[in-house]
Image 1: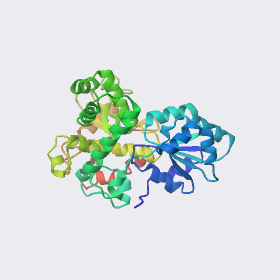
Image 2 (image 1 turned 45 degrees about the vertical axis):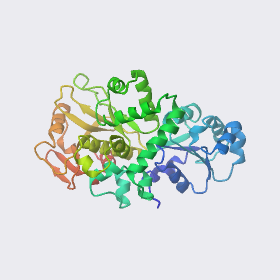
Image 3 (image 1 turned 90 degrees about the vertical axis):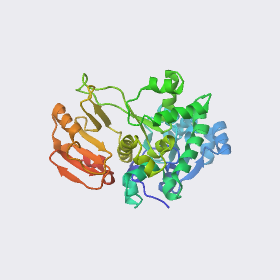
Image 4 (image 1 turned 135 degrees about the vertical axis):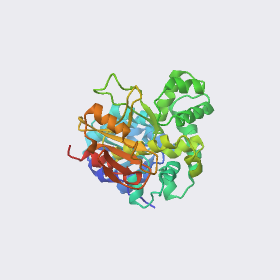
Length: 399
């Protein structure tokens, strides 16, 4: 079962570069997308030991012996970062747009290799697990947000009908055993898994590295390094605060989120609807679901996410997300895990924001866990099911 990905709409434009890099977490659909879109390219997996050994020992001959009229897909190219210099030579000597298609799942190693060798010669895209809009377009979106929060959005859940708990337990185990060992020398992998679980328990919270380190029994520098590993392999991301023009009255720490709520739920032991409904993590996980989807929407448009949050340091208010448009307009979005609309408190934080930022309420948005869409004097209320195109709506609006 092949599901059309939203990023396909811009992939052709990126294929005008000599090389195209499709980055993202393992099992997010990078290989499937590359094979589908570049159907005539020769596919070579650098995870294969024999293929990797050839590429490592004689990279120039490797590229030339596999040369063809269409191009090459080099899957998981971070295993042979040295090959980037030879791809540069080939790209510079021959005018072949879209000839090299690179996929990879370790952001740090890949960006380092690309920056050193292919700067200006490669179009870089990030493919994350399915977005709300992609699931909706393919009639795969569940009726209730709890189901999507628990199941997550990894493609194999939907194409192979796997059970979420089994998939994510295996995913986390394989990730720790393989990717973590490759990225750094972690002495005790059990402690690293505890570290990931502690991060899951802090979803949607201000990031306090020292607190996580103490709880895990490791040093703050080690915790910082381990968090960078989770970010490099697309497990977690930090959402930065927006403090321009509000420097003295807002917090400056980022917030922590998971790219996929299914992984976070598995780490928290939340595997059923009844567990999530009674969990103190339901609100943060719903917020994580929408924040991560806004990130996906930006990436699927091929745009750098201009996504932030805002919190008054005195605790007066917090806006869960701010989208910066054209470097001058800030569009506030709040998230409410309630399935019913409350006219009493839905817009409290946004009203405070309107006051201190001197903005109009017509640009306010609240995404909630119910099914209705309403336009109020204080802003727009949008069902989570209809939030999948919110970024494109905001970015193309005339302000």
